[in-house]
Length: 211
Image 1: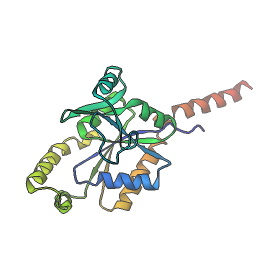
Image 2: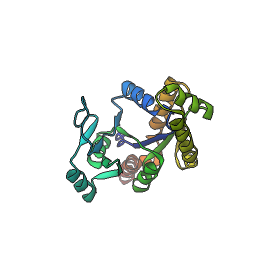
Image 3: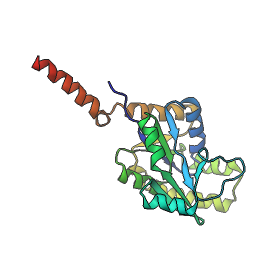
Image 4: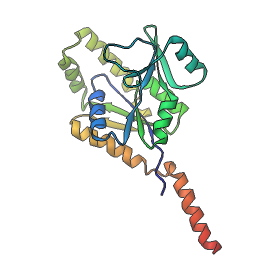
């Protein structure tokens, strides 16, 4: 049977849910299976950043041309700079059979699902709200005011979890990585993602009756 095209995956989750750590581990263990989407941005490269690795660095004119030519899956503007997901890179990886991961907040995730209905939406959360708070405090990098604002944001984000396809509980890193990988692996066997294989089998079976 023919190998499936890759699946577009959107991972969202509360700040402090450990998305970044899980993604690093996924790419370390399964780099042959997954590709992390690289965003385009108009902000200047920071020391040590390389074009096409951390970001695709664009001028404002280049980025606005990408918007006009519908070359972005999604985009937004933060602090006078544009950020967006280039369609060409994602499609290239999907056609190569890799599952492409986009780490995007909830509003962006729903827009992508609307535009690309085959997208698989995954929401990551710690095992409890108390654990979420402890992780945010444990970072030691933010004031309590910032932590409180992140928790308030989490209250709002929690209202949209039902719109996702799967919930991933990040309690133990290794278990979370395996849970993520198992969900995506099983998703490749969904009937709706195998229509070409099914049609091929039907054609082959129909040939028997002709003979």
